[in-house]
Image (cartoon, rainbow, N blue to C red; front, side, top):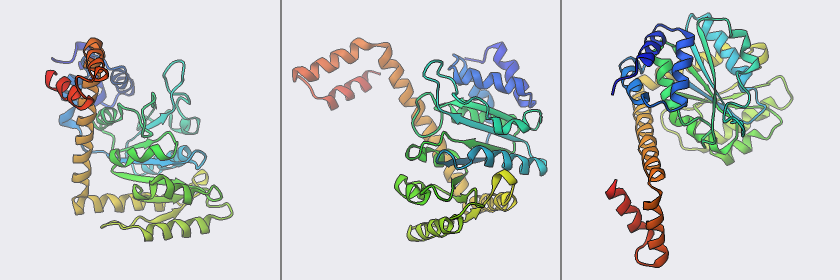
Length: 313
């Protein structure tokens, strides 16, 4: 199956960097249009170049402000930047609850920046289920850097590490973020830790606490730095960009970038396979009902029933 003529036109426009074509192509992916698989096939040859930066952290640490500051810094370097801001879903429309972030509107008229709010739609992990496909669209559109800002819900945000090349964990002094990060397992996924709002009391102690916790863990190859920023004033952002660049160099030299992107592709394929299985089950409810009844009757067990359904598929 080939993309329909409308999608072909959108693909051409997206590759040319046209914001409207990029936005409409992303909408087709989010709405699970029938030709999405063929769209992905068309885009696959031009993907794999953008550096993907994930930003996670508790609500109130300044993720949107930090994202905006990073966009400014990369634009000063002449790089094109895509931003995916994953928001919680509206319980009524299923759409992004917060919409395009107000703090990022300074970049709204910049043709070198594309900002998109995406609804998580109940997907666990802090991201949207369609994030990998949307990243491929932005990559094919020629963006040098793509920043993913997650919902900010704590423990379920570990998925960002499987999606980003470089994961930034934002914390703020006086919020107990050090302990929360340890409890949530975020210390294991962060490539760079950023104590934002560092003009507040307690910033230095938060930095020491995080460094101590990192030192207690067993890490191989890359030792995550802990930086201080005041994103609202762009303080420390240049140093943060330099550390992101240093991490990217390490990824390439160590071969870790290839490994991470391989795992990302594996996760994407697994998710698509599981999604296809769910769709087939939903389309044949009698099969599942019959299997469940057999388990209740004691004529089979749940493992055997599941194996039979998979064989039939």
